[in-house]
Length: 253
Image 1: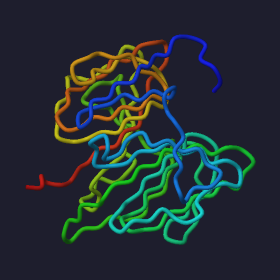
Image 2: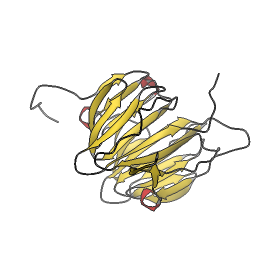
Image 3: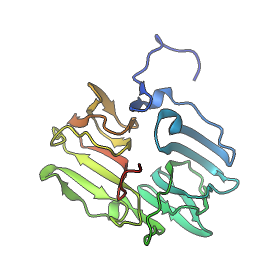
Image 4: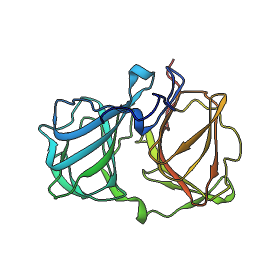
């Protein structure tokens, strides 16, 4: 990075157990033991109060996993921001390019390999599976561009896509929300579900707890349970973000 060109400052907001905004300017590279020739940044983890882990991973040509991501009871989701590479799920290879995604059920090994000459940029999500008797998840591989968008909350200028099936075997989902310029949520949400949000395009202002904050492409937001949240789109182009949401389970007491 070299010497700073101005006073040191940050847009980051960190409220452990509640919420966080982590812009790309403040991220550092983390050494992940089973990744070679990769640049990885851990955006969210239980250290922040989340029940999941959320990473950005840039896999350089020839790079990838030296041994698979694996944890007993751990499920994995991968989304491709750019480039192309191979995701191995339980011994089977899948080619994943821009806007492609892959889900691996709990306790399934996941490998990564960039067999191209260009960097391969990914979002990586992991969490511990909450079993539900009589139901189970399955491998899902797809591309965002092949999914039909739906009108969100009765508003023509906000659209949603569901990346995983709405089935009881799945205890979380990934969605994208697209806001046309000037669009917003229909109300301020306050709910038990956690979110990990990554902005794919656009800019606007997000209500994070009790403060409206400017946000833009490549920003990451963590929302813990019951934190007020809402979004207004700004600028001349659409905003799209991808986000995780736990679902299909009752409260553990």
